[in-house]
Every structure is written in C-alpha cells, then in structure tokens.
Amino acid sequence: MCKIKHLFFFLFFFLFSFCNEDEFVLSSENISSYKPLLENKNIALVVNQTSLINKTHLVDTLISLHLNLVKIFSPEHGFRGELDAGKAINDTIDLNSGLPIISLYGKNKKPTMEHLKDIDVILFDIQDVGARFYTYISTLHYVMESASENNIPLIILDRPNPNGHYCDGPVLDLKYKSFVGMHPIPVVHGMTIGEYAQMINGEKWISKKCDLTVIPMINYNRKMFYSLPIKPSPNLPNSKSINLYPSLCFFEGTNISVGRGTDYPFQHFGAPYLDYEYSFTPISGPGSKYPKYENQICFGIDLKNEKEYFSGINLEWLIKSYNECPDKNSFFNNFFDKLAGSDKLRKQIISNMSIEDIKLSWQDDLLEFKKKRKKYLIY
Image (cartoon, rainbow, N blue to C red):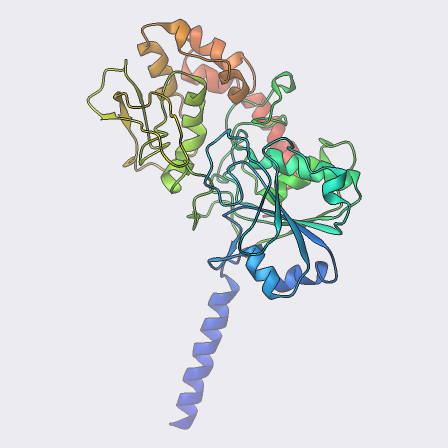
C-alpha cells in the first residue's frame, strides 16, 4: 500500500511539473530574470496602470524588494490610465510611493538629459495592443532614443500582443510621420513590444543604437488568445474592443463616432445622419470628456456581440459609412491621413475602389515588412 501511495504521489508531481513546463509566464512575473540587473542601481520606470504582477503594481513590487526606484515616466492617459486620449498631462507625484511622475505626454514626449542625470537603468513595462496608431510604441521610441543618447541601458519586460496573430493595413509613408505613426510599419504589426524595440534598434529608426535587454515571456505563442487583466486605456475596456480597434480607429479621422462617451467604446459606431435602427448617445464622462456628438443620438451598427475574432482589418464599415454620408466633403478630417499613414486610403475610398483592390494594394509592402520583421521575432 505504501509503495502504491509513493507511486501515486510521484505520478502527481510528475504530471504537475510537466503541466508547469507549458505554463505561460509574463516576464514581469519572472522576477529572478531581471532583479540582478537592477540591484544597486538608480532606476527609472516607464509604466502605467497595466504594469502589474499578479494584481500588484510593479512599483510596489520593486519597492518591496528594496530596489532603488528614483522616478516614474508615464505615457498617454497617465500613470493611472484614466485620462482622455490626446489630453496633455502634467508632472505629478505618486501618492503611494512618493516618487515623482514625469509625464511623457505633456510638454515633453521624450525624457530629457536633466530627467536622466541620476539614472543608471530604465525599466519599461507597458501593455501595448499591436496597432501603429496606439501611442505607447511612440513613447517607446523616444525612451529608447533618450536612453541611447545618455548611455543608459534599457530593460523591457515583454508582454503579449492581443492583436499579435496577424499583420494588416497600409504601411506608413514617412512623409506622414506623427506621434500616431512614427515608423514604416503596417497598421497591425503583429509584434510584442519587446520585438518592436528590437526592430527600432535593428532598422536604425533611432540615430544611435540603444543598449537594450528584452526579458522574454515563458511559453508565449503569438497565436494564443490573451485577455488583458486591466484595460490598457480608458476606451479599450475589454478584448472585443481591442480586437476591433485597428478597424474602428480609422473612424477617429471621420465624422463617425466610435462610441467614446458610452459604455461600449470601440464596440459600436454611428452618427446622427446614418439610417439604422440601433442607436447610442455619447455623454461626457471620465476618460471621455466632450466626446464626438455629445448628447446627440447616433444611429449605427452594434458590434459588441460580434462573434468573429478578427484576423484582418475590416474596411466594409468605413466604406459603407462614407457612401451613406450625405455630404461627402465633411466625412474625412485632417486626422485621417495620419491614422492611415498616407493619403492613399482616403483617395482610394473617394474613387470608389473595391475593398479587394484596396487590400491588394497593401500586399507588396506587407510582404516586405514581414521579411524585415522576421529577424526581430522572439516567439
């Protein structure tokens, strides 16, 4: 009986260990892989509300490990991730830790020499969503540039890309470079933020190479579904909105609302002039002050129960909305070409080009991008 018991426990622990071998582990959770790189160093963090280790903020975790945190840099939406898109953010103090928070979405988008004069290492841990116009990768660019100019090593704690299962969209023409598109990549790039940093270095998108270390995740697969434990920004509250975001964000450059100021941003769209039964009314509130068509009834399409897990950009909604706009000259605004990465998509829609032909026009650039991307992939 005793032998059977021992055999049972052996089998149990063997199976448990085997299962653990395939367990997905965030790089931030694998503290032993990066703690030695931080010890006895003055540390600056680039973090926001997504920088969690098992529901505990990275700041609190590192303080508990008696590491010497000096300051925090925060991206668009702020350290707590509660502020409106596009809203300039002032420097402040983290009340929990007493650390100064330097905004990288205010008077500076890039850490200055003065900001970094007492820093030995920068640690970057922010959840991205894999779209060119989502500005956390632009913040990454400027952090890498400043780190390289000031000879400070940068460590990235890698996180999954919830849209990492595909690449799609027009590649940016650098004549249209802006903070919502800094590099010649497609709208959906299919890379983790660590892989993306390696591409910034390798393609020489910054003038001097950054001393970069990417802490990889364990057992990550870019085809795996990953549900974010906390929303990465105020208007991306769940996996559905994140999956729809690359398709619906084009509407930000038009007179169509994507539901900012409602309970379901980036899960429906509409305008007062569209002719649909479904409707919503945007109202001003936290994370969405003064939304498009505030207090006006918008008629449109409800996507929150859409079952498809998109693996490509949907242009049907955009083109249909343009065709139904009574005043075509009012449909696009000056922001659209920045989001699209050139004026081509706007001109293609105006000229009534088919979706198939529009997407065909992307393919050569997408193929070339994927060839370049391949050497920077970790997973």
